[in-house]
Image (cartoon, rainbow, N blue to C red; front, side):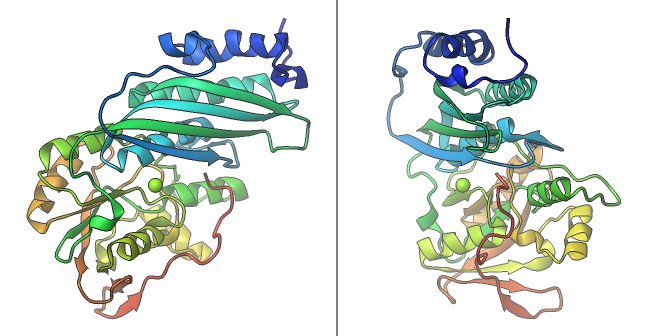
Length: 335
Ligand code: MG
């Protein structure tokens, strides 16, 4: 009864769209709220709420470690979590190209359902548009997430203070290099894979155990260097990073030297930066180390009261250089 390719009719709002929603999306995403198919989702949520939205246009659609579906769920889950929130609900909107293979769509939707399940978030409302061939490249996905703030005061970008320790939850640059390598058909001595993962649980564990966390941020597009620059500008402080303390997967490091890229500017999709008072750094590292997504966590530097708005990198030989924001786009359509 179904065509193996998506027809323009499926986004018409008529019978064909209803079939797509009922037989397909509800089958994978179904839950009591979504199944009602009302114009809007009715949610029970209390206290302050964190909300974030993101659109996903990554190419290729599938890559080692993830796909556009898992990325669309985890990317938004992570942005919500970084405010110190427990991600609860997602909306999800698809813009689909006429002629898209239904089994490609099914793989992506399955992957989204799995990622949502793992992150314990519910997809409660959505939208599907099908546009004529050529009007979009296969599939774009927008997700919006909301979550309940877990602690007060909660982590925010302007709260970094001189003396704070700067931690990262693991190796830098894995996602960026994987997308580039997959797109260009490059292979290295060892396989690379995206770190795409939902960090909601990890953030929950940190907030429960550590008395005070000033900033949480996921270093996605523009990588560690760009995200740290955003934080120091928001907080009006400086940051000193020890280059040799930043964990980088050896194959990513080798791939980056080969391609002339810097892993500190490459995107991550399952990592966080945690900035907190120095006396709690050890405790936070222990919590991170016990979680599957934090086994390579490390303290990479500290917040300083000199060089406000700047990130200074100390090289292994003791020299210093400014770690600027990424200029322009290093790699388009990476998420
Ligand atoms: Mg973010």
